[in-house]
Length: 244
Length: 307
Image (cartoon, rainbow over the protein chains, first blue to last red):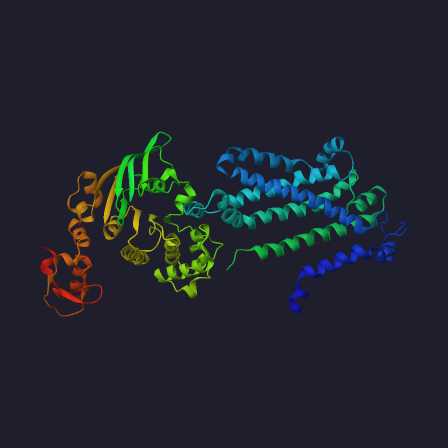
């Protein structure tokens, strides 16, 4: 048990991430030695905890919305009534994905102002496609025979969806959410260009002010955040894996 | 029991079921037989309303199936399909318990019923209850499919080519099982197949369909002895008709009551084909005949088979 815990990369990533998040200033001298002349050595316009929390909230809100809308759309277009809209939904989601997030921000700022809101919109649009596509694939991947048997035995449409289609599609849907969230964590950093507080804030400040250590500090934390989230999803996938 | 009254169904102008009338009495094992595309599956699926008919009426126990909500209707009708359609994410016990759960049976009653059905299908309840479908062989999965269909003691069992996807040996065993279950429970069964041998073996009543129309309705013996059209004659198979006759007639019909004979006995319910097989195998021309309990009834002679 102990050995298994020590061997899991998840534990080490959590420890490293927490350590850097809480105690980045401790590494001031290291950055000072590597990049002499940058003062202060560690980004201090906002605490890393504060930036992480704001980053997390932003991604969580956008991803929750993308999941609800994405899965909802997938359910709709796999019903007899919504089948005609399948292509349209797919095209729309693909267009959302094709737009560079920076362009979405540029378009959203005039409408929504600076700050986290345009970023949340960009993240939502950007994160929709993997969820929609995977949810459709997951639901359509349920064998016809299983669906046929389910309705043939007297499950209502709602029961077929809830007890058969969604549980069987869950691993594929979850894989879509995992991709969407992981990409979202990286993409959210761009929000700092329009005034959202994220772990990308030190990156943009560092680039603008030619203070390279800030770029490293922000980038390291964003990367660890993304890796950590991905590992947590891996755990969840394993927990939800089909039995047997 | 089931009554189809001038039922029709068309898809995009192509008539699949054409003005079909058919009455199946309580307790019958009725086989809908025909080539692919003759409308037999469509007919079956119109009974539990997975497909709605365009015109005509279907009555179950005198009541129009459209008078009941489809889900409620289907919970009263067992349904078995070719690729079993077990829920891969549910244990065997949960699969079998599907309809009882929908009917809100109490948990103890469901558990007892699941074990009873597993035993009925010759699956050890302790070993199989907690397994998942993918851990079972194709034949075992199909047994679970049958158990699931019987779970809530339905009035009627619909079976859509249930044994078409399993190997011949397993199929033979499953056919034996369903024949036994029919005898023991007296359920009305409506069974779709394109396999004439299967139909002759299982049916008490065969309905041969051709292009959505009823070509002939009769007992297996009727169909083989008096085909009413060239289509039926061709379908039943002009070749080997004698052998087919042997397979639909029972030993009981040709037995000499009270006459004794030596050797391993054959049951009176066995077909003449089986008796011929036994005689050929053992190089004898006389077999003792017993009933299901093993009581000696008489004997059957080689000459009796061809009389």
